[in-house]
Length: 170
Image (cartoon, rainbow, N blue to C red; front, side, top):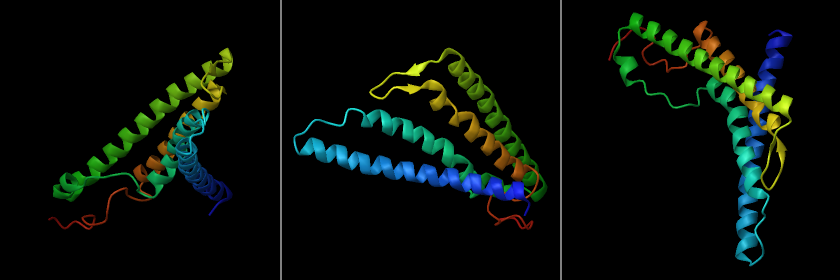
């Protein structure tokens, strides 16, 4: 394994860990907020914004890991009914569509991030955040998702189960 591949794998895993930690923080925060309100104290006004921001970061940081480990929902009934050669072609088309859509999101996310940096725009809620900081995970996450689908397109692995890859039909 090359240094770049190893660093990339650690990046994918590290972002997933950060996403998981953020989910745990959201969970604990909700429990604390509800407990505080149940005891008759004022709600944590800032927590709602922090939870919303964290959900976005969890999604963008966890998506590449989920693509790598086939964690998204896949309905294979139509695929399994196809002849093996057609199945391979359709798989490649699906991978290509996923890559192209991901890169489209990267492009527009990068434009939004750059615009937010230029204007210095702030997201004004109970916690004020620079908008670019909220937008930056979008192109980063989708870039990594595009790379992961590229691995499938190039044949390093398949996103689908191996039930019908040997050519037998149902």
